[in-house]
Amino acid sequence: IGEGNVAKQKQMNKKTLAVLISAGVLVIALIVIAVLTFVQQSAADQTDRGNTSGNIGNNAMVVQSGDTTYFNYKGIFSLDADGKQERLTDQTSSNMAMQGDWIYYSNHSDAANLYKYNVVTKENIRLTDCAVKYINVVDDTVYFFMDKEIDVVKKGIYRVGTDGSDLRQLTSYDGEGLNVYGDRLIFINTSDRRKIYSLSLEGKDPKVAGTDNASMMSLE
Image (cartoon, rainbow, N blue to C red; front, side, top):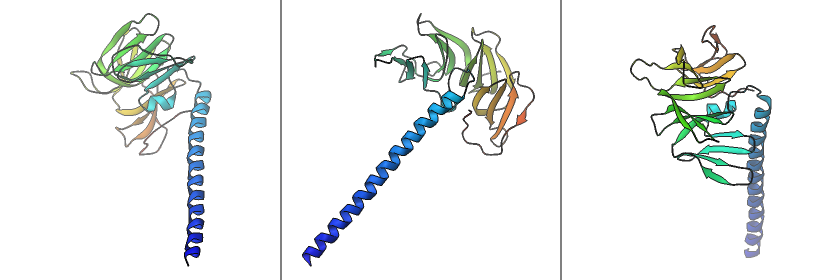
C-alpha cells in the first residue's frame, strides 16, 4: 500500500509540475504579446502628438525621444541607452508629451498646471494657471483637458500655444483619453454616457464615433 501511495504521489507531482510549466509559458506569452502590441502601435500610429496614444490614455508617465527615455518618479528622470540615469526636476509629473527638446507635463507639485521643461537648457516654464490632463503637442499648439474648474475657467478641451499664449476653450465636454488624430480630436465624452466623440481641431463638427460606456481608448 505504501509503494502505491508513493507512486500516486509522484504522478500527482508530475501533473502539478506540468500545470505550473503551462501557466508559466502562458504568462510569458501574454507578456510577449503585450510588448509586441505596444511596438506595433508605436510603429502604426504616425500622428506626431508628443507621445503614443496608449501612453496618453494612461497618464503618460513615460515619454521617449531617440535613445533616451524620460519618466516620472517623484520628479522627471532621464535614462539613456547605456543605463545612465539622471534626475532632471523635483516636480512630480504626469501626462508627459515631448516635442524637440521640450517635455510638456502636468506639474503635480504646482496644482497640475501645464509646464514645459527643456532637456538641454534645463529651463522649466509654467504655461497655464489651471490643472491639465491628456496633453497632446502638435506643431506650435498644446491640446488638453482641463482637469479642475478654477474661478471662470471651466472643464472641457482647451488649446494653448507652446509659448503659453492664446489659451482657448474648444468645447465644454468633459472627458478622458484625448488624442489628436490627423485633423481630429478623439476622446471619451463623459458628459454623454462615455461615448467616443470626434471634433475638428477648432472644437467644431462633433461626431459620435462609438457606442456608450467606453472605458479606455487606443488609436492606431
